[in-house]
Image (cartoon, rainbow, N blue to C red; front, side, top):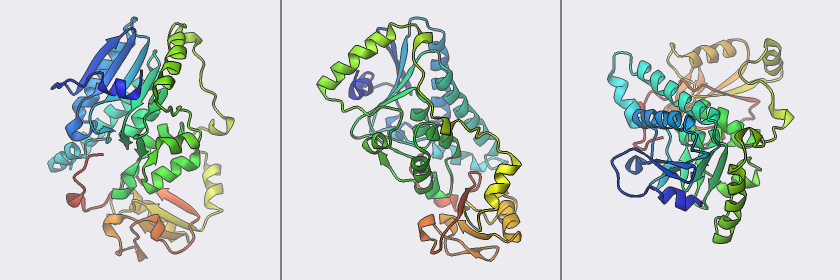
Length: 332
C-alpha cells in the first residue's frame, strides 16, 4: 500500500477525528483533523489511545498503518487548546501535565504494540507529530514529506520528541533539527541513513514493496527481525553519573542556554545564575526577549546570532518566552 493510498483510504468526509479501516489484516488509523493540520488535541490523543488498545487485543490485525488526511501529517500538540487553559488558576500547569502525560502514554503504546506499526507520511510532520512518526517501527514517506522539531523557534525545546528522534537518526542530524527547527525532507533523512526507509513510490516500487510485506506478515510476530542497534547508541540517556557531567563541565567555558527565562521562579533562571556565578561565560537565547539582558548578559534570538564561539548548548524545555500572547496562531 502506498503513502497516497493509505492517506486516502479514509478520505470520505467524516466528523470523527480518528478513522479506522481494516483491510486483510491491516488496520489503518487515519488522523482526521485536516482543518487543524491534524494537531494532537486531547480528544485525538484519547482516540488514538483507545484505538491502539483495541488493536493490541485484536488477533485478526497483523500490522497497523498510521496515516492522515489533509495538507499535513501532524503539526504536533494543539497549541490553541493548550493556550486556552492559560486562564486557569494554575495558568494551565495541571492541564499541560495531563496532556503531556497522555501523549507519552500514546507514544509508548505505539512502541510496545504487539503488531508492527508503519507511519504513512504524505506531508509535513512537526514536533509531537514528528515524534509519532519516529515512534513507529517503520516510516514510509512521499516526496512531499518533511520533518521538523520547531519548538526552538518560539522559545521552547522539543525535549520529548527528541527521545524518539535521536533513536532514529544520527546524533548530529537530531541536534540540527532540535537547535534550528529547520524542515528536513525525506530525501535528506534517507541520505543521513535513517532507520526508516525512504521509498520512491512509483507503481513498480509499490508492487515490489507489497511482495516482501505480504511474506513478512505471514511470519509469527516473535520471528520478525529486530533492527540492528549500533553499540555507540546504547548509552543510558535516562540518567548520567556525576562524573560524566563533571567531565563535561570541566572542558567547557562558554555555554549558550536556549529557552533561558528572566523569571526568577523558573528552573532555567536558577541554572543560568548558578553557572554564571561559578565563572562560566553564559549566553541566554530567547527570541521573545532578544536585545534585552538577563543577569547582565545580552539575550540573543537564536544561536546563529551569537558572535563568539560556543562550547556547549543547554536547553530548557520548561522555559518559554513571556510573550505568549503574541505566539503564532499555527498549531504545533
